[in-house]
Amino acid sequence: MTVKEKFLRYVQIETTSDAACESCPSSPNQLVLAQMLVAELKAMGIADARVDGHGYVYATIPAKGNHPARVGLIAHMDTSDGVKGPTKPVCIPDYDGKAITLRNGVVIDGFDFLPGLAGQELIVTSGDSVLGADDKAGVAEIMTLAQRLMAPDAPEHCTVCIGFTPDEEIGRGADLFDVAGFSADYAYTVDGGALGELEYENFNAASCVVTVKGVNIHPGSAKNQMKNALLMGMEWNSLLPPAETPAHTEGYEGFYHLMHMEGDEEQTTLSYIIRDHDAQKFDERKATVRRITDYLNAKYGADTFTCDVRDSYRNMKEMLEPRMDIVDKASAAFRACGVEPLITPIRGGTDGARLSYMGLLCPNLSTGGYNFHGRKELITTQAMEKMVDVLESIVTNA
Image 1 (cartoon, rainbow, N blue to C red):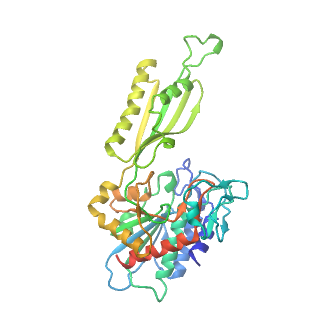
Image 2: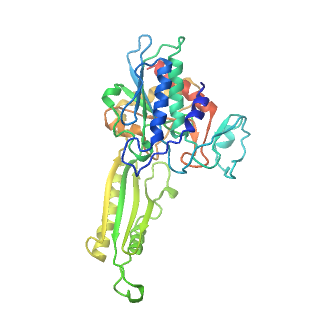
Image 3: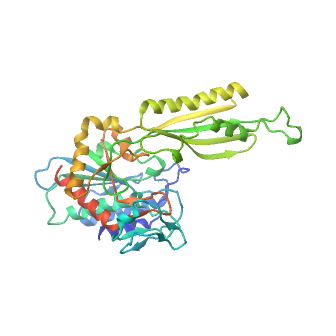
């Protein structure tokens, strides 16, 4: 199968991860996809392909020729819950570079990159779900490379260690990854966006849950008695810097992001994520939410507000800077395939960030997709084909 055929097959298995579920994988269809991938890998002749009890897929392609390096390639099988529902991909064989109206009336337009995709084959959604290129494009690209390397006429290459993880979208992709058993010298996650993206910096990340305890009383006799937890929660949020939200930031700029708010007069909960590339600024952000909490507790009474801040992952730059040769090898592979690498900071995280702190250095590579986590997600067939070439260049020149 071609990379396009593999991709179209994989995206039609709905593998949305579920943060409310404590099992791993968090959704049953992730295991369905994992078993499918293992069957395909074994059919290629990769004898050790396997899925473990937590839904992680591992496989090893032995070296061909005198190539002692062991390079890992990793992608995740789950998809975002940004728009839930089964994926029905639509192919546009010879895109004209103009606005795209999807079947349900959603219009893809106004993006600077669209005219540059003219003449290519686009794969889009029906408009009813995410496409799942994040990260089934990465899965398809690695699987297509595996098929190529197992062919009798394959070029000489290093040992290739393959890993497919569950539950990356809910921050658990690296939790149970067997770094020692994977046995790679270093690795790359194939989990980025536009063709050419190469990333070795990501946000420092934390979650923040603010709980507000109020006092409810009949509104007819509430004067000087009611403490409305909803209004106090809004007051807590109003003390954050108003321009430091995702809608007002880019590049290296950090933010506070309110993701969920629920409650009533008696108790309200606000759930945030905190992000910054700079470690010192990240610590300052965490100190800010604690200061706001202390200030409002002094105003309304002790323990009215609680603030639970938990670190999620760290910027992998700290780990990779001493080994920039790993990044340089990926840059050289892009250039060898006619693609200029675009080194940018990730405004998010990948499995590679946590794996880098678990002993497996792991920059992130593009998949060729755009607009992840939404109805307007898309990817081009040509970008996926090119990424297979880039991965081949990496493992043949390791």
